[in-house]
Amino acid sequence: ETIKKDIIKAGIEKKKIYSSPNSVSISKINKYKNFNKDIKEKIHLITVTRFAKGKKGLDLIPKIAEILVKRKINFMWSLVGKNLHKIEDFKNMKKYKKNFKYYGNIQSFDESIFPNSKLIKIYKNNHLFVSLSRIEALPITFLEALACKLPILSFNSDGGNEIVINDWNGKLVNEFSPNKIAGSIISYQKNKNTYKKHKNNALKSILRFDLEKIATSVLADYKTIIKS
Image (cartoon, rainbow, N blue to C red; front, side, top):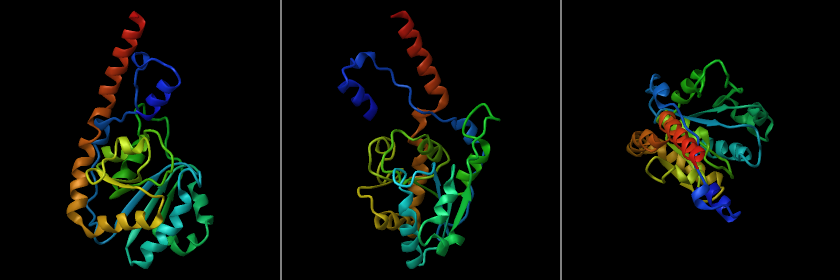
């Protein structure tokens, strides 16, 4: 919707705009099981992104880790994406080495439908998806995470807040604050009922982005455009 508003401001008539949002294959993801590790014993976090220190908010990770460690929160944070191993060079990150697991860019073109099965398994071995991006549109990673029944913790910015409903399928933080992000992570671990509620709502919130529905919609739009 944010992009649509920008296009309208540029002078394009609303009736000439057709939406083809990102989509995700829910049927493929549903073939894999979520793990059942107790969130109160150890909370498992995952971030899937590329290395862009400022835009993707990766500079906040050492600060968040420091707060979690000081609060004696037992956590494991999986970082998936191209060049994310560079985060190891950030100040103080070596202190928290045991709390992080780095994956490279594991996406491949061996499978005709995304996301890759290896990525699905990684998603499903975690409790919570954490996005620290300061700017986003409609991130495909949000759809993938929600389809894997992971609540999303994100900043309240355009794009992401179109799909994450605060205190329903995740939490939205209004400030670019490591303290508030860390506090939200801790609240999930302390309140199992809230976590379960958000987890149960995760998949419900993105059914409209199912690959089959979007493909059917896009095909119908193309037919309309050709006729006109």
